Amino acid sequence: MSRVGNKVINLPAGVSVSVASDNTVSVKGPKGTLTQAVDPDISVEIEGAELLVKRPTEQKRHKALHGLYRALINNMVVGVSEGFKREMEIIGVGYKASNQGNVLELNLGYSHAVFMAIPSELKISTSMEKGQNPKVFLEGIDKQLIGQVAAKIKSLRKVEPYKGKGIRFIGEEVRRKAGKAGGKK
Image 1 (spheres, rainbow, N blue to C red):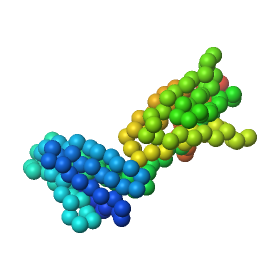
Image 2: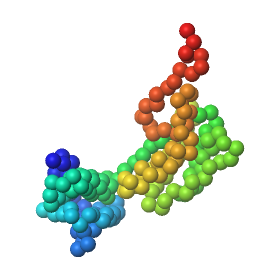
Image 3: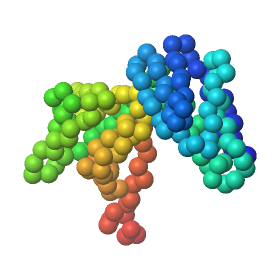
Image 4: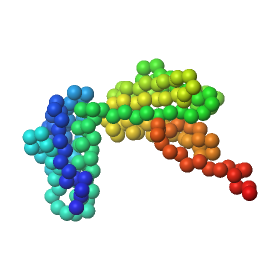
C-alpha cells in the first residue's frame, strides 16, 4: 500500500488545478503556472479544496507511479503557492561568486572564471560579505529545475574530504578524512 500516494493534497487559497483530457495536470497559483503529464493509468480527481491521486490496481508499477505522481503534483502546488529556495556556500581561499542578471560567475581556483547561464524561470542572487563565505541563492517554483541547477553548480567544484573546500548546501554535513599525518601513531 502506497503511503505517499494515499495522502490527500490540500489546495491553498488562490491555487487552482485543472486536469485535461490527455491526463495533463495544470496547477495555477499566485507565483505562476506548472504543468505535468500524468500516466494514463493514474487518475487525478478534484474534490473541493482537495486533490486525490488514485491507481487502478495493486500492481507494483501502479503502486510506484501512484506515489510518484502524488509527490510531483504536491511539489507543484507548494511551488506555485510558496516557491522553493536553495542556498549554497562556496568554501575556499580566493573563491568568489557574482551574478549579472541570470549569468553566474564563479572563481573556483581554476585558471579561468566559470560562467553559467541560469534558466530564466529561476531567480539567482549572490552575496559576498566580509568574513563570511560567498553564498549563492536560487529561487523558483519548479523544485525539479532548482535541484538540477543546484546539482550542476555543485559539480563545478565538489567538496573534497581533507580540507572541506568546494561548493556545498548550507547546513550540509561533510565527512572529513584525517589525511596522511592522521594515520601515523
